[in-house]
Image 1 (cartoon, one colour):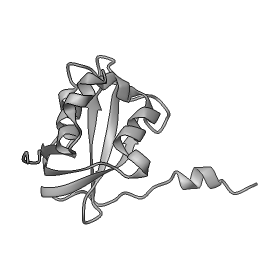
Image 2 (cartoon, helix red, strand yellow; image 1 turned 30 degrees about the horizontal axis):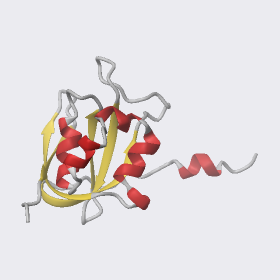
Image 3 (spheres, one colour; image 1 turned 90 degrees about the horizontal axis):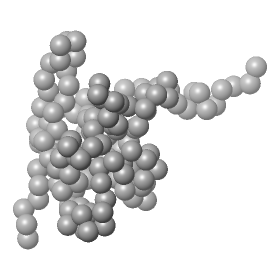
Image 4 (tube, helix red, strand yellow; image 1 turned 90 degrees about the vertical axis):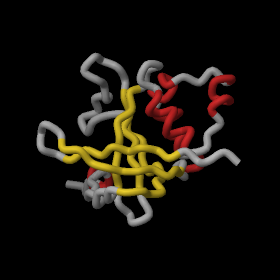
Length: 144
């Protein structure tokens, strides 16, 4: 039996969690589906993506973003903190639902393979399942 190169390359170890506090985060992965290939969706069947951030100490944290006009504020807040021209997005007619397309989202959020960066405060809250979930609060740069 041949060695499963593709299967082995998809096995990943877990990076340590980003510690609570203020960090410079960089987008390191954009994920649109579960390991079984099923697209991320809310309970009300709205599309989502997971954005994974890396910090300066090689820790990681992630957040789910619902890709609808109503819930687009989380994506807008992060993009604004990254220095993206928000007025230009509006003029270009870009919508949160455009990020449902994995190729578009990855190209936009990781141009040339390098993730956008922003400062954020990271904290954790314990979920009903007992797991710690990050809250990522982008810090917008002061206007120049």
